Image 1 (spheres, rainbow, N blue to C red):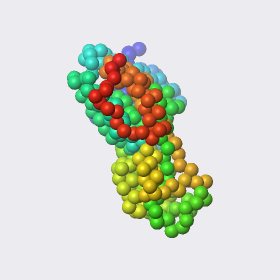
Image 2: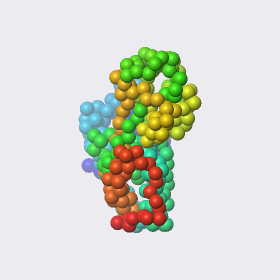
Image 3: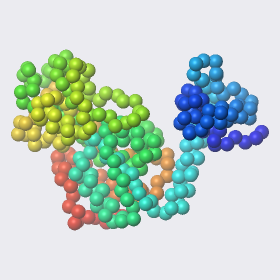
Image 4: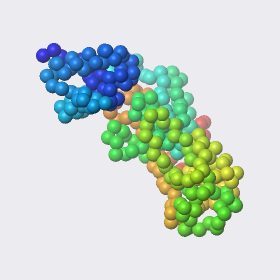
Length: 318
């Protein structure tokens, strides 16, 4: 039997995932005829029907679905092998892509990154900001070497370093509510009031609504800083990380409405990366550096201290 090629497996996986030859061809930047021919060749080689073409959208047969799972795993291993070879050939990485998520205490995290990369003039830090599910999309698509955000810890593709807990508190400005603050405020009462929510930066992932009360009026913003400004001006209500509003809660410029129906939520901030792909020497040094700094960062978060570290007293990287 003639051996199949990775190209043919790529075509098969793309047809299954995209639900058709034309869509798969567009994703792979191939012609429709080339993808169709690759699938026909695979079916001849294996002597089985991989696709059910009887409906509007093609679907994998039972045998095709079984082969799809194995092919998907094989292609992932092939990608990891290629990346590993490339990293060995190039030595130390010339750049690292790091994504800071919306939950990060930015000054503290930027201070840590500044300390690390100050010792590595030949490696450029490509720093990105993403919100909600945007960091996950960057990581899972291979566009980020590391993210500083929350992750799904049940995802076996990922490994992480715990960096601390970030409480998000539902808050309003004084005078915003047309009724007294109590621990019994209901979603029905808040539904008539404008809620400010973060805009998800993910392009393709499913976008669940986090802490959103379905109502008549919403405003969406790019980051928590703008969200905080909207709420301070009495234009909306919403959830904000406690580290951003400690002072405003103390002096009364913001009021917590946390209670029975709005308990707030605590998210786990982590450094996350893919465990199913190899990492270069600089990426691994950064990972080790963050492991050494994790305990101090967790303590700062719990104490509400978000000042950046003093760069003149930087510690050794290893």
